[in-house]
Image 1 (tube, rainbow, N blue to C red):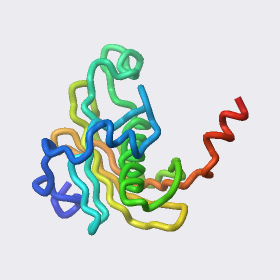
Image 2: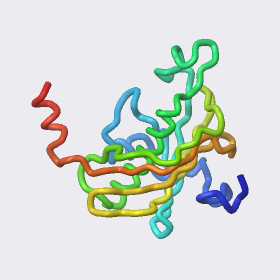
Image 3: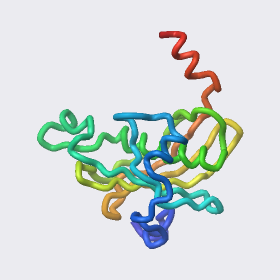
Amino acid sequence: MGRRDLIIDFSDYDLDHVVADTEAIRRANMQRYEMEQLTAICFEDRERGICVGYKDLTENEFWVRGHMPGMPLMPGVLMCEAAGQLSSYYSHRYNLMEGVIGFGGLEGVRFRGVVRPGDRFVIVCRLLKLRRSIVVCEFQCFVRQNLVCEGKLKGVALPKNFHLEEQANE
């Protein structure tokens, strides 16, 4: 992958500069426990619509034991979930959409490398399109500056009373 293909050059952000920790991410995103796929946000650029965050993977991830036994690999669906959570964080941070944001779709997703416990999984998202109830972002994911996943995602605003409807149906 040539540098011209990067959403943002690696030299433009510092992974050690945390702009939002887990608590700040929780104020924007509803995911908890095993489904929290972000450790920190380290870069935000409102003008260019870019956000960079990461997940520090440990041997204690819920998927390690079963995906795959003896050779744990981060499932691709969780790579996409991490990108979705980063774009959701960014959307809430800048009040781009109201309420809970859910997945509306994925396009052109490609997995280009493996991600294992002990890795720092870095996610870069860039806002491409925003409508009142839909956000479209492109994302790239890296381990040690090697591209491991990329694609586009669509986030959709769920109804404001979505969580109340779900509880009533239980």
